[in-house]
Image (tube, rainbow, N blue to C red; front, side, top):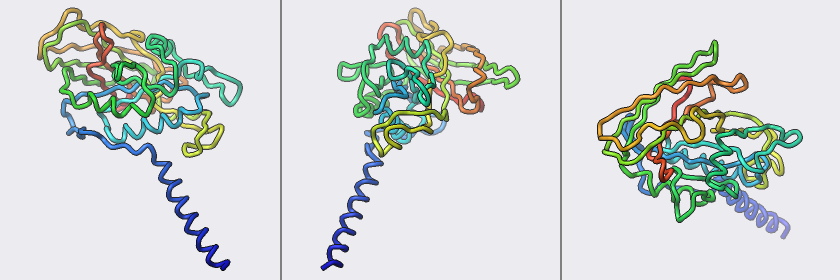
Length: 283
């Protein structure tokens, strides 16, 4: 009888372990109608601005979801982690890191972000909302990711380690006639930052604190401020190109090898991003 009980509990334990491991994989994501572009193929690229903070207990789950989406869509999806709001305020150790930026706070306040993790997809409303819970990020991405691109951006970076100065060459190619006014933004992000993070889900790390959490795609600074510089004032014709040369000195506390540059162009009337691009700062 005891051997039967032992066998029964062994089976139950295996089943429980299977479902527990499966839960770590959640949410299970499938691309809906997307494709993986060939190298050099001119496709629409999407920017996901993830609003987060190191005292946000749900944010590790949101970041895991963003990582899953990045795995699905590869270079067509660009992630930017913006630390802003009350959950980003520095506290006593070990939560004394401060990842806030003037640019991040301005974006956060402009779009009236009120919950975390919250995500804005290409600065485009979805279901009438700017900010979406992470459970809606994929469907919002799928809504626009296969639209034909109107613009294509290329980035070439020249980083001088002796003075930590970066000079980039941004080439914007217009693939169709465009009406309206458009601004170009240029941001620096850093990954691989190890700092404490609060957490309430053991599937994503220790509870209640992950002391060695890896913060990725963290917005560090911007050139031209939160809203960029005007590159098109009254429409532009197909085939025209514009070149800009943003430059910035990289903070001594940032790891240059872990930094990327993110550029995007948006309609100043709607705020909708029409194209984005990302490149490693050091090629």
